[in-house]
Image (cartoon, rainbow, N blue to C red; front, side, top):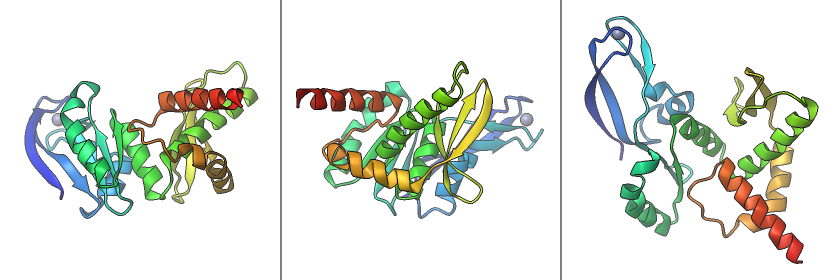
Length: 212
Ligand SMILES: [Zn+2]
């Protein structure tokens, strides 16, 4: 069930009080929910007075009913309160994810829209980062982000020396990563899948290999 409430805040541009619709929970049965989360439009508020568009971060749960995935976007210091709900959802076989920023929620929503595994995507981002660093040695590479291009095909966005670039994501490579890492990931029920998770996973993988 989707749940929302109306709140008021001052426009950051002109100071006029305006009303926002905040979603506590939104699911894929609500029209455009997924698309508005991916684009970020769900978090954009247009001031009726001056037309200024402000993007507001707030805690939200996105239920992707089609893929049986629940994604919480909560500040790090407020995650304790949602742990019982997460535990109950996990027990029901729901794939649960926790992110702390709206941009990360958008990225996850795009990954699950394609029915993909975000853990494989993190592994691919790591490999893509290594590739870019090799080609553009000496440049400063920002974080790599999964996104959908105009044709709704998967790609990676990244900044080199402050400029945004993108590269197409190969579906063959995705399948290849799944084949290599699928068995290792089977027992992993991590809630937070991000750059830190992938480093930990790779270190664990290395340790297993060196034992053999
Ligand atoms: Zn305004």
